[in-house]
Length: 181
Image 1 (cartoon, one colour):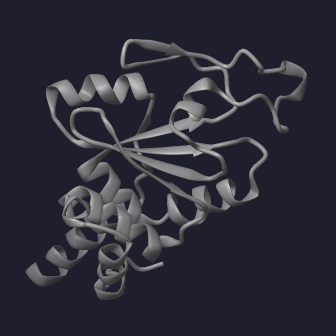
Image 2 (image 1 turned 180 degrees about the vertical axis):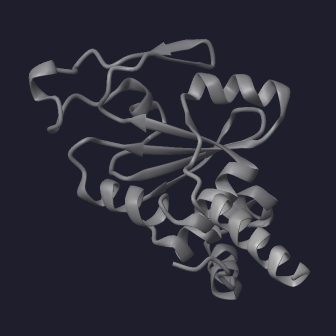
């Protein structure tokens, strides 16, 4: 009887943990949260019209392992690269002066913050340090196992030991993904 109750409890807890969604916030909220509990930030830079963005949202960010890992170790930010959100970063205010409301949902003007980050394609993921400094942008769609490599490499600080592209290539080849999906 006790084994059955423990098993049921584990199933319920696992179901709850795996049924979670990523706790998305604004960059401002994430930077404020870092002051109370330092964590790195993972920012999903997307557009409304981008097919690979939607696929990554559904397949990668919708994966239970990715969701749990991000919620535990990162602050997660969603940022529309062509949106109208006002961003204050490094004491500068970034807006999208080229946004055209009649083009909502289609290609639109690029946000100044997108340009500041050097993003030229979508989807893009930008990681920030615990101090709020940009670490690295990663361009393009990444499946669960590909994204796991970056999540763990950045969280653990392994990227700081790389001296060049060969070091990352060795790291990538040695990496053993654990996330399913």
